Image (tube, one colour):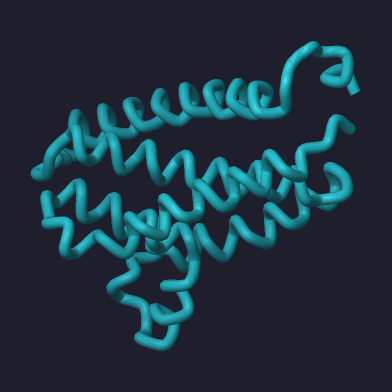
Length: 160
């Protein structure tokens, strides 16, 4: 309700929220990379620049899904439930927690429809220095998600 008195547009409010969480996400990325490289010898054989661009794309696509859920849901409780229902299967089956490669083929096919699976595939390709031939589908999916879900988020933005 306090946003109702703010003389600004929904697009600017959403952009500010995305900016704040982008900073949080980038700080987390730096911390994870530092711990991985200092304590576990993790190296990034691919291009750091391509990895960062891929990371930003996956992050913005994921943010757009969350913003869309928040815009479409009738209230915060419903948004929280829908977000949890979307988040946990993606976290478990995308390859972020359990390696995608060790999943049974049937489960891989199901996981392939999850947006985060495509994001993880894009990040793996970027971090390993693989060619765009390997990552074109995840790249297209991430861009499409960002545009579609971001547009829906702006369209259904509510001040309440």
